[in-house]
Image 1: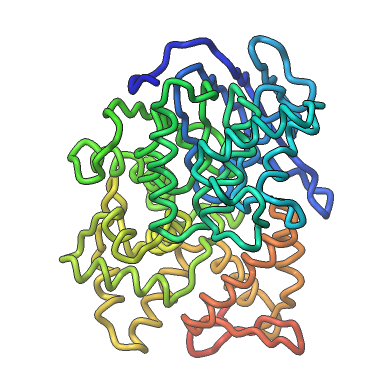
Image 2: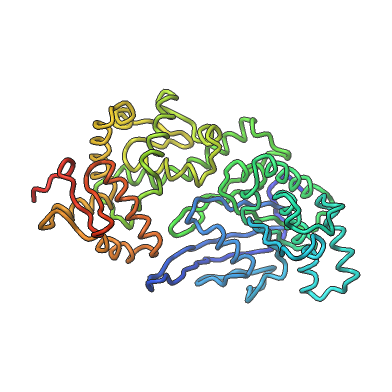
Length: 439
């Protein structure tokens, strides 16, 4: 396979694809919006984004497992009306049948296609040999390591000789060394002349993984999911993570995934709503720990370096960055984070002073915290039922997300001594030490 961006035949064409679902309370949840994408013969494409960007939903639309709410998905010029006949999926969770042997698991797709037993056996053994599991044909999944079970998943997909190999976070359930080994083997297989697949599309939240594997990285924004950038990776394989060009691409993508929303919040901290600017899923302790790391790097740190030092993935690190930026403790500049003066003051303060700084920033810049404070000030006795906020939040979030938003707001408010929550009464009560109740 070539190491340059493919100009080959279009295998998949997505035109203005949108996807929405109805939540438990009847609300409309938009997962994807106006997605336009082509997958071509001769390329590996990575779909990269944070939680909520609709990566896996998009992959399932390509596979024909989900029909788009709007727009159209075509395979080789024909609109998909069901399962994509030219695609095979590899899952994060391996999805093996525990009562079947390795060979039987690999033969499943062929059996579903009505392939004769003798031919099934021959093709399955060839696929098992290709992915390096010779000698384990009669083993059961429980006898295999995680890496070996994922190899079975690869073999089960490749035995179908699909045009499109679709991979949904295939390495994220594996330990670091096993995942790196399988990535290397995937690149080696891709380079062989008899590799049966014409295009690989991989969903990931790992930026380095995307740059290591892909010819094109499609960067998705969230809520709803949409493509915000297309990054071409023109470096030859195998790729060196320490090469300046590799690091520059990683930094560029980090900037894309962190720079847009935080810049908007910084520009309008007082005017956003709890729906437009949800609270990032981050604890106060996690935020403080991140700030300490940045402070220890003279107030400016490289996000990929922090992620590497902490052995974090993108989805682990980004909520902390988002929360610190929302609160005005950090600024995000491409792939770097910069400690603000108020962030430095928070980091260096004693516990009581840090609580006061956090309370001031949260009340001014975190919309849901500000909303709760306003409601408490306007109440007759300085308390409000938590169900009131839960009901309001469910008009813009799913039940689960609304509950999590309220949990975060309570945790942040408690730390800043703005208010407290009583589980027995189900009421949020103003803390006189932190929240002035004058109307």
